[in-house]
Length: 289
Image (cartoon, rainbow, N blue to C red; front, side, top):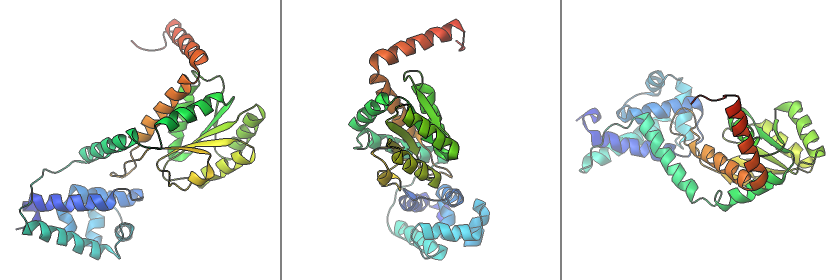
């Protein structure tokens, strides 16, 4: 019986692929291969590397690198293991399962990430501690490069409503100038955002900040990230890597929790500024009802 007519066998291959892929640092092209196989697990047992590349919109070498990234010598070995999964399922009774869409897979992964974050030793009370450090730093420089830049921008946008002096740090030598001036003005901490993939320029900026005497707090995805040894304190929230690009729901929840902690560490000043902002927004009719 073809695997396409045995949902239980397809579900078995999908579960096996999910276990192999979860937590791997795959390139965007490799994730296209992963996404295709998860959406069409029946394809994994018979497509050649060239055919799989064509079906998933990547090159044959990308398929080979994808298999290597999962720990196989090459794609043929991955395919043989997928076939073994099918044979194992066909020997048992199995449980049929409906096809799982990309969105449903992502929601499942992010739900697990949020549950992990709720009890993580790299969040919790650490958030309050780091928030109090950042609240005391005047000014407070904030740095995020490439994929992490939107997190830095969001933090600066909201923190500026409660903190008296928040400064966005751009990339390159301009960012070095901002750090020098911030340190001269009395800054004690730099907040850095570093999510996969980690830019070398971010590491260099963190190292430069520390030569100036700034302490560094990092928001990242894992305490084992390459930047962990460069910083003084660290908050971590896992990313979901089930689709072509990382999904960062948990890091965003961590960022908003850190903003709340900074606000709580500035009870009088922060609340007064929030109320003043709300009044200005109302006076200017800034937002739609």
